Image 1 (spheres, rainbow, N blue to C red):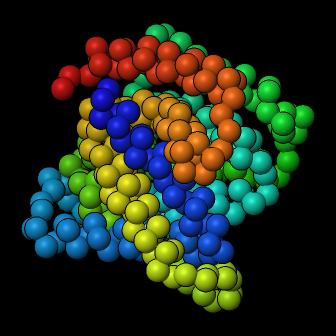
Image 2 (tube, rainbow, N blue to C red):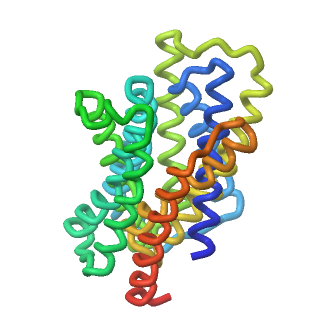
Length: 293
């Protein structure tokens, strides 16, 4: 459980760093390109320079690798960052909170992994924990309406969740999260860099030095430590638990925002997060009792 919490703390830092980076004037798509491109190069360079090995065969897993790259990384990130300019952050968060349910469904059909009653209880408590945050949000009146962009954000959440399930399948087949993520992120980086460069929408960037420093920070925290660490944990835990654990990221994101961006935290947030933690703990206890180390 310690590693789950720690890695999600690193993951949460990417929201604060990313927000600071976008405040420099860089376009979201170009920022994704820089982030993913640098991360992909670093991971693949590390893999080949240190002569790392994996038990799985690339040819036998090529379909899964391509799907993970196209859907789980490129598709989910590109759609999400585009739609974030169209809907409120609270609504996008609520939609992404459906990820554990999507994961449970995909894991059943793709990996034949079933959910027992206690896991469903933990999952439901974790999701319902966000109700206070939603009801007392300034955007509460607009949350109940559903439009085209909301549906597209759901597509992004589906793609993101599919990526974790596909990664679990690849890890179970002996593939290394380091190599697979390196390939997927490099592909996403190239695509996300070429699109804004071709359309002239890189953005207005007054300080490239500051931007690159933020990109390097987000690559280390999110793409290397968090993504790779959670990828290795998929050898033990289900993709549903990994996506459910992501619901605690707002706790750390709020703390970072309070410290570095002077953002306000209300009691509704703490009530929601307490409920989420209870649900996560119930799921974790059942997960640990079913899966051998």
